[in-house]
Length: 325
Image 1 (cartoon, helix red, strand yellow):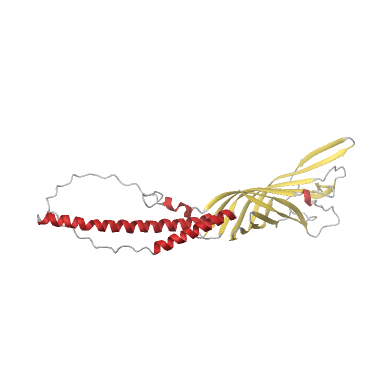
Image 2 (cartoon, rainbow, N blue to C red):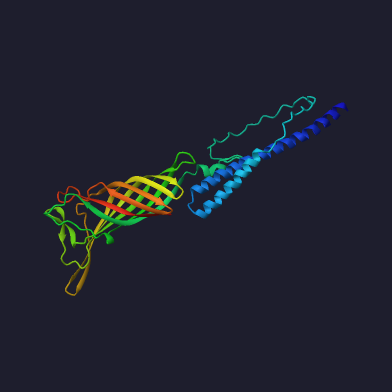
């Protein structure tokens, strides 16, 4: 009878211990969830430039800080030592039947476990995203030491455009609060040059040369297409202001001249395809500045437009804007 009374007393003593454990566990859960919300809000700020959304996030951060202060002031009950339960009389153990357990499969490290798993940390490890970028603007020639013995092209800038369509992978460098990212991918670059002095490209004595096109009804145009690999470091300096610097390298895949002429009553449109001994490779540097969603891009090609041409030393430069989706 005394043994039963002692067991009942120990059971009653364990009830407040369990209640204490529940209070402490709930408090720890609140602290954990509140800190997670704080980190989520930081990620939300990094992924938007909308002033209204940023203002709402700021108010949420204020409430989050008040909750954090409130939780820090909570007084938790002191942990009471458990009273050991009286030992039960030993009974002879039966010999267990032999059983062969199946071999455990090797863990891949990607499994989620109840209560604690990688699914809770997906926003923190998601450092890579894919971006579709469109660049467009004007381009022109930077001709060094023009020769007087040949015709030199005069570019009509308002109708000389470039387009660049890119698929980029943006990878954040460093920790979750890092402001630096590396972007790289593939793009298709199109340069179109409008000749204001009515010249077209031709081979003279096996050398590319701009020759007069007297029958021109509109400015002759030279279109060149490249497949390029861009690489750049993106730096987010502040809210709504970012900076990018890098380079690009590519290969020429398309060249065509579009000519419009008029002979008596006929208007003739023609396209001429050839390589005109243009440089097959293109490489250069690019820099961009972004402010409140408006991006200004500058690009300069270090390679000569032609290969092994004593008549022309021409580099291409581009100024435009970029839209990222």
